[in-house]
Image (cartoon, rainbow, N blue to C red; front, top):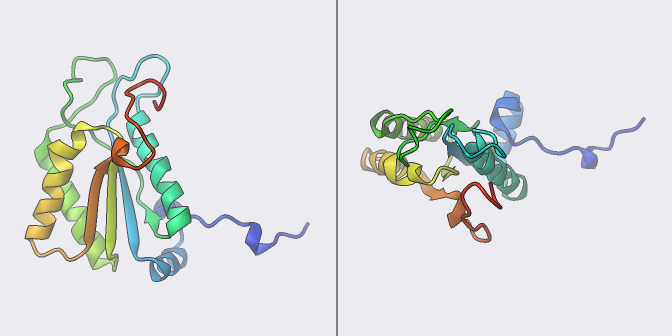
Length: 165
């Protein structure tokens, strides 16, 4: 059986890529995409990791069209008042702000020039994503960074735990 290289899909998920593939992807487009979400109750009809799964799939699709690589999903949620629901695990914003800042610094050191952060858990942006980006920039970060929640992406409407979840 013959396999033609134009039939192979280009891998964009960082954790599945070999170093030479990462270098080639970065040379074509030095962009990295970060999906965030919570592990939380979304009803019996959805998995608890839905927030990050949505964001991850959006970013994989973007990277396949525009280039760049997608960091593995970050499953930490802050805010939203979900701590009393079963199977919901939230953290405070302070350590997450630091993690976002340090990840952005590490990406810059590795040669990335753009980063897009998308959270499927809406409170993450106000709880720690914006603060992490701000701290990165205030510390002299030079990458172009955009942080959004998934319903801020054109063509995606918010509809918590129903049509889009």
